[in-house]
Image (tube, rainbow, N blue to C red; front, side, top):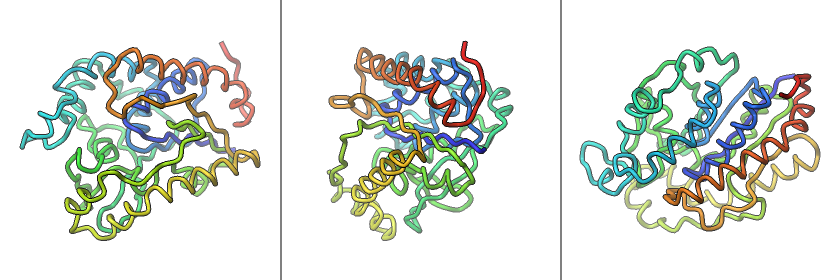
Length: 288
């Protein structure tokens, strides 16, 4: 049986997923196939490298550090992103809170990140390089429209994977997974509304009509994907973990108490779900 884990994005809301994955590390739960969107895979690589608490440490240390996140970064012509790209994707993993490249390279499963191709408007699913100390693909999958520059990989222009496929559970099945677990970053009752910055997005990306078409249908596609996902859960085909609530939690949240609280929600939900997920995945490992 091939097991799969899908990690939704959501910028800092993804600290919930980090808590879930930290609990999975306690239980020695690791899938054969891991796919994530935006911060979902941005945080997910620390799970694959078995670095418990690393994501929580990064956010609690740097959420209020202007080098990490500020409007000054976006206005900097050498950065053009709300996040300090070099600081976040090079300095932190290579100096301050080291990423374990060897452990990541040793992950025996398959890892993919979702990016949105601006030319086609469709999602592309790219294998995450095991050794890239610039984390270019992770930057591209996290590239929220308007807040990040466009990233070019193999000649293709990319932005945040969540624009085209925010919860890539179908991709996990397409890759041959028999049992798929999904970690959401919005509560079960959440319904996505229309894009508030639609007019600005249309001006900024006017040269990419297929991308704009995708963005115009983003909310409907997201809500429909979740509806299908919950139906699969009722049929016993997927295993879902979702936060209790994300109301009042910003995707660029700076309140450390809120950040720790959402991580804790994920951690305890992950701990509670671990035995059932072990059974769902058909594993026979002992818990410590």
